[in-house]
Image (cartoon, rainbow, N blue to C red; front, side, top):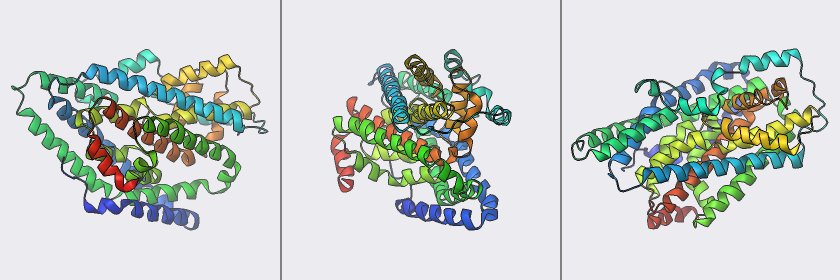
Length: 421
């Protein structure tokens, strides 16, 4: 694939860093300006989400359709899902262990009020409270076009896989279809490249609005909880994701440096969605086959949200400690089991972790749901770490699965990562 992202993207990390610094200053000294600018961040995310579904669809279809029947897609899907659930389980355990060891909710003695219950009721959404059966049925869209009108990538993935397999098995009759879809895929990549120019502006608007509305006082009050969460995310990234990378001869630090532009965009916008196209292109530049990277990474965006998983268990332990509730081993295991289901399919945008926590505790009687009100004010300060941790894990998993499936040019991988080692 030719390089779609322009030269300006090579210095994007500096632009985003400057924008974040300016946003912090603007939010503190000119809060009124930050409120006016906040819609810019929302518009950026909406523009990205508008194009994400068709890009993923064309990318997967062309990847699968171009290889015919050379690869066992069923085996790849099963291996991917198994690894996703294993990583999610380890992330849930990481959050629980961190909460148990650091005790971020100790000595709070919090008693939820009626006002807290009303606040959480307003944040609850019917889409977040889904059983496993309902979640599985949600994968099937009501119509072909309707799959592209929602915010969930899973129905799009299903349609893309079916279309790709059908295209591959009806060759050469559908040979003329693949060049057209490849052209459509390249067109959407170019649109994303154009939108990426506005990432620093979106980062400025998002950061300044957060500082203006939340202030620094709330960070001081919840500093220990925020620090505990960042610690849990860091340990998971280094030990679990880094350990998995090391098993396949990858150096985590080299991978992190290679994708540094994308990490900064995630930090600035609190969303992993704007970087998906760039990640797909860079993974192919690292030698990953299009049909594997193009399928595994979008799947991981819905099935492997490790940052959210860490947040769910750590936040639950915080609520239990703050409300002076002692959870038994059985209750903790039950909570982790439920979170293995509820953590799937959430969007990679700011606020999704809080909604998932509300959806989880609404079906768990052991913890008071209104106590989630404690976390509403500081959720934005943890959303960056959630999205960043999940995306780092997803990139590592994509590289590992590509190498495991012999779908990665290891010489190209070593050559590309060598300057970042």
